[in-house]
Image 1 (cartoon, rainbow, N blue to C red):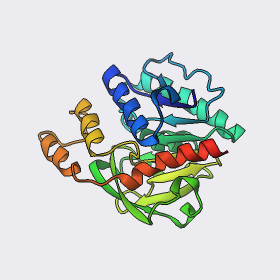
Image 2 (cartoon, rainbow, N blue to C red):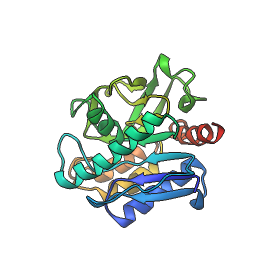
Image 3 (cartoon, helix red, strand yellow):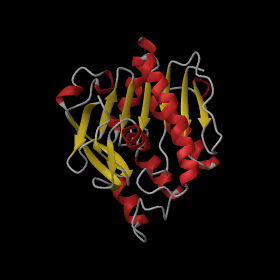
Image 4 (cartoon, rainbow, N blue to C red):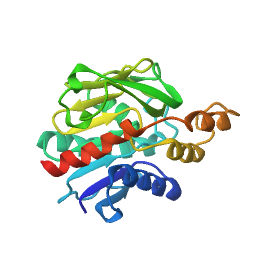
Length: 242
């Protein structure tokens, strides 16, 4: 084990697909990315001793409109306890995508609403001045396309967090907490094929308008994600160089 991927979602096929997505864009081998799935109220992350870094994947959970409040709260608290412990230690690097943006904002002093929700598709990410010198943003241009799809959005950052990226329609696209936790609202672990596969697991969950599925798949087909995907490789390089 060198890295850990935590998947806060249910469904064997979709969690397996998420693991493959992270392998593809981190450059890690299967034996280098241990997969922990949080799919029950009593699910635990388990020990991370020896891990170089931890990824927290996306989730169909939403802070603003939970479908299964009991399950979501239990899994959310497990994640929040873990992140808080690692923030206090300031050592183990963590990168959380999509759901993590709202989760950590909500539980660490920020504000989450649906004001800046984005339908599944392309977004154009713009780095802030604070992104200069941040290891996750190394080698990135000032702006780049990425893939997104979220009902929750961050209106106010978690206490003490640093904004690293924004977009025209969503003012919080990426931020850093402390010195070792990074969060993106967009999906650096997905390309066009991967987001199409992901969306097919969640038809009817509000990420696409009813009857617009094929139109959405066609729209994302040409989105170039190379720069956004670079962020995961940057995370691996940073974690291994510490």
